[in-house]
Image 1 (tube, rainbow, N blue to C red):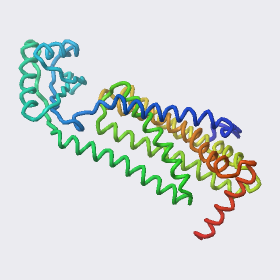
Image 2 (cartoon, rainbow, N blue to C red; image 1 turned 90 degrees about the vertical axis):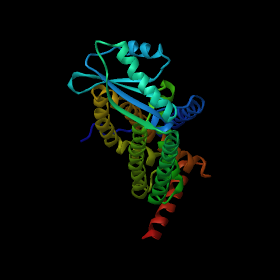
Image 3 (tube, rainbow, N blue to C red; image 1 turned 180 degrees about the vertical axis):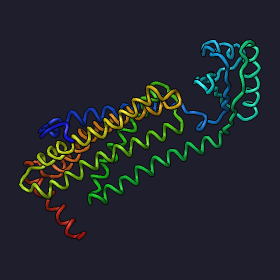
Image 4 (cartoon, rainbow, N blue to C red; image 1 turned 45 degrees about the vertical axis):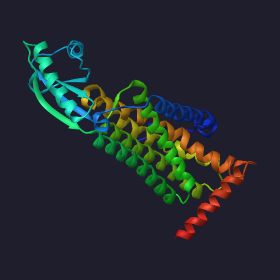
Length: 323
């Protein structure tokens, strides 16, 4: 299936703008995360989760006001439960004893505030601060080791560590940009969001590898072309495939965002943002960085032709050596 027939877009010509936009997203995202941080869920901070259900819907503002009047200020999330009930999840932070007291007080306050619509306790979970810190540490290690593994794979796959580093910089840009949105909006970051970020990294590097692989193939086939022509033709030749892939994923994510309910809403939002950033960086930024490195920083500033020839000779020698 070909949505775009024989496109000839000069992506390399717009490389400075693309790289500038990516740097803005990356630096802005890192600055936001460092300055504002994340609103971590109790999986990372420790605390108690109390889930109650009412037979009739209760206004969240009224629920919060009743609890606040008694010195309680939990985070509240509502969802429609089976049987037409409305389920409210309340999160409180603190040690186990304080949380046990808080959950008991919460039930007493709600029963007194809504005598005609008494709540039912459905679930109560406690996560200690030590467990929360361990989960946070493991999350950081999972992300770091994933990125490290991707660098190693891409460097081995293309016999060039620079291409691997560029691929990881590009997906790091996507993950940071998505995480920064959650930091700015103060949305809760839980293990499901971490899953979304790792999924974004996987989709992003997949698109990048497709373009890199076509670049390597064209270096071998189009021996008389300049490196600029190689990069542009590689992106244009894979453009339809990239658009079909991202539209397929985005369609599912948008449907989940609209109809998936509050449990999947933040996960779906992360996927929508991450897929958009990943597609942009794969098409506009990753190959542009390779071009800047190989041509502008590789000592071949006299023109594209000598740079392309040098890159092709080097790639062919490595392929022959591996054979």
